[in-house]
Amino acid sequence: MASYAFFVQTCQEEHKKKHPDVSANFSEFSKKCSERWKTMSATEKGKFEDMAKADQARYERDMKTYIPPKGETKNFKDPSAPKRPLLVFFLFCSEYYPKIKWNHPGLSIGDVAKKLGEMWNNTAADDKQPYEKKAAKLKEKYEKDTAAYRGVIKAEKSKKKKEEEKDEEDEEDEEE
Image (spheres, one colour):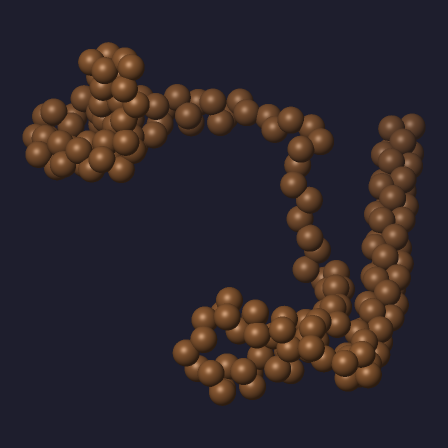
């Protein structure tokens, strides 16, 4: 933690000791802490800076021996994986967003989104057909690309597995 964070923590503890039944308003409390911190001398701040340095050293020691729990590793998305296709509504939005923004330059993003939603709801089913067809084509393409991608991934995994088996055999042969 930063030295200021230690200072705020001690201020909070002092406040609780003086007024155990009263809960402090956070914005007022933080303003008072900030003003008090600004008026403190460097020697007064030194105590909190020492606490921060000690905490940083503890953190670095802990991180050297830290092992993340199994099963909780974050799965990162492969950048070469195919991207999901746009939904029908978003295809509609991609066409009409620039037109609305051009005609109404003062509208916020939220207001433009509301207007697009109203337009979509007021659009007849026949007028939605081209967007639905385009979305269906994009979905088919995505499914084909995904199948091809998964085939490549499986091929790479089997290739790695064969290489590992070959390496193990070579090591066994060398031992004999």
